[in-house]
Image (spheres, rainbow, N blue to C red):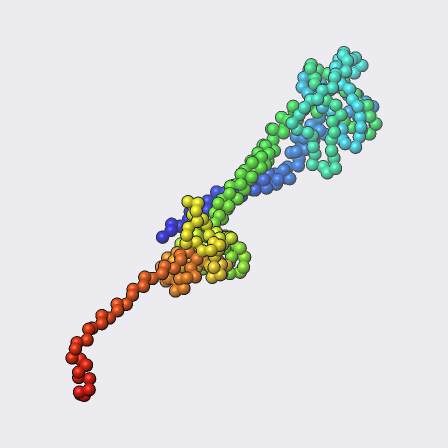
Length: 316
């Protein structure tokens, strides 16, 4: 008896489900904490200074990167300089800096997009004067970039949402790869045409559906290719002398393959516990062996004696 094939591992599907649940949970968290996101990323709530167009404002800044933002539907120019008071500038304007950051300002309000006007790397702690050159209806917000990033990291809900989203994005492709590999490994085998006319793989445990014996038949064990119907050549290279002409299957064998009967597609002499083909001459595997003829013994003639003819007319 052939041992039962190993059951499919449930872990690939579990990993896929886990990754999907993580992504779905992160989306739900992001959608439910709009106020927390505003507090962490919206310049209108995280700014250290706010200025209108054509005006200036004093702000006490620390020596870190600062960026000025306005809404995307406005244009403006700005300068930032060191100051000891409103009317006393102690230095020239600071040079603009790239002030790169991993996070950009955002808001949950639809249609509102923020753009950066300028950024400066403040070198000294103290009072600074911010001047905005724009229309009077333009509002700008100066943001302490490291403070904005720290505010985002200080929220446990935002960290949980980002963590689950990252974990789901990493786990889901791994689970899908394992799942497809498992199905492809278990789906390899002989392809047969079922009773409904559809091409189906003959997988372990599904042989009964095609009327095939429960013993598992492997493609490499068959003497012919189940797709093309041609007999395989032996591993030695030279074809055997008992292979049928053209190396093709008979009509009965092809019909047996279409019904999914692998055992019936084998030559009669290759079947297990099957009667021998009465029409041996039609076999595709073994040429008929002529039976040895035994000549009947000829009767030994008896030599007639000299007196046998004398009584031929004596009567009974």
